Image (cartoon, rainbow, N blue to C red; front, side, top):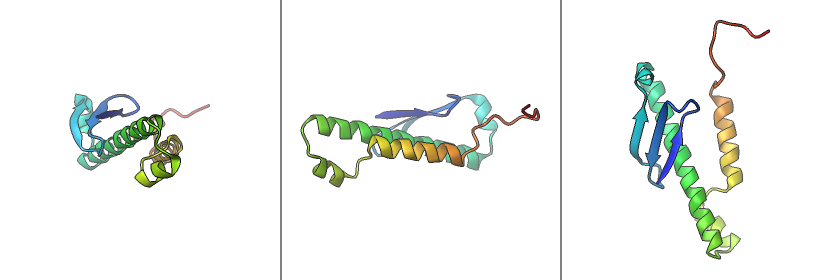
Length: 104
């Protein structure tokens, strides 16, 4: 099982290694969001948790002595793969606070 949470921690998921949600925690204020937006956030967090679980599995297999060629065949993500994907996710989603105040 793996966990992932939104940046503010208002939504968190626990998933299987395949990304199937086992537990979803949502703060009540988040339920006011548009349903499509909330569903996208939950799906994104499920993918993130699955990727992290895959990395943990890859690390276990590597520690057990599996060769890098065999690890590549598993399709399990590397730390670099996850870092790149999370960077792209954050750049695609506007995580900056939305405010009527302007920066000076």
